[in-house]
Length: 497
Image 1: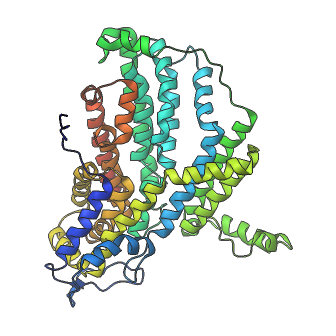
Image 2: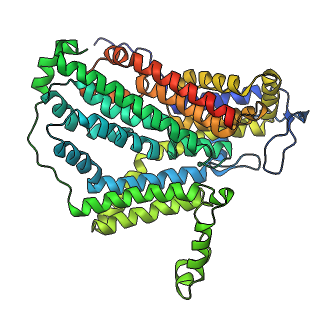
Image 3: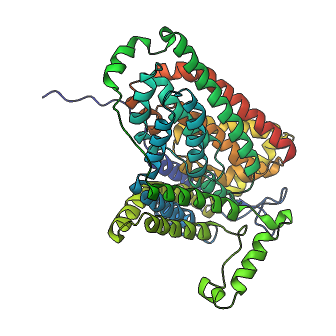
């Protein structure tokens, strides 16, 4: 029997992160130990670095790092809050997906726009982008390709148009994440800032990039509509028409599914309202409402006296929100207790890998902090960055995250692995942590649309029967525009932050 040859395969994010933990442990034997004085909020005070007794890390510490990364140590906050939050969001999404409300909603939009299919580009891209910016819509999009591709081909477009609507739409939303728990949430937790910090700039970025995306896909679709020979997959059009035959379906949302959609939207609206620090802007409305509700005779005791007002919530409270909303979805859909529990557990299981990778990534910080080399590396960075403007630092941060996003495709893993160092480094150049987070998301989002290590990208192209090189040719100009626009917004934000 002939032995099957094994080609090189890029290791998973888990392997890469564990190797980094091991490398950092080795470095604790050689890098001098040091520490900074810190302010009351925990931020390092520039110019206060001093040497301390070394504490080299061994094999035991390497294997304990992910455990301590999850549970926390005296020097490093654990990832347990954000990991449990991710699992509960997964459970909530599992219950929503069980109702079929999202799938049916997209199908209804497609059906209701029959004869105006080109307008679907302007309708669906923002919808998928909203999914990306709020909950990191990615693998869930796979169900929509078989629905949209036949429609686009039947009206004279090609598979690239259909794939672009979904893939570019969802991933440009992830690039400009506002409250995405798997990117913004993990990064904010690692940087010790609120998810709401810098949201206005990420929202501006979302608006600009979604508009660019609509223009780009719409322009290509118009060109193909006028002259099909200009399609980048023109040589496969006949094959695709045969393979992706349009089936006549009458898909309308049921009343229960419409109710589910409203609960789904409400969950993220409440999450946004709960994370914005209203009192900092002089808005007392939510604090006053909270005081009034908890002070009502009987109701205050029934509802709970310890309820925190919107604007002061963090991971524990928004975790509770998604548990509660998951139950509410089951109630409005009249789901059986058995179906609710099974779909909730299945949804949480789908995101277990993301929850675990947060702990593994946090293990890098555990090794560095316990080995007393974090401050030393920050001190080197402080000296190297001295004299650099905020704009130069932001640009260097963006460039740093481009290759790192290829190496570690997981946004959660990359944020957890690097934000503990990059956010404090930004402090030395007067760059706030939220801008470092935006730079990280911007670079990671670009790579996830074109990288062969991105399962979301490769899965979409496989369904659409599109070669990777063809996809690169299709999005090359678009990627250049997105990078220029993202960097321009980062530069602008650096002047006002």
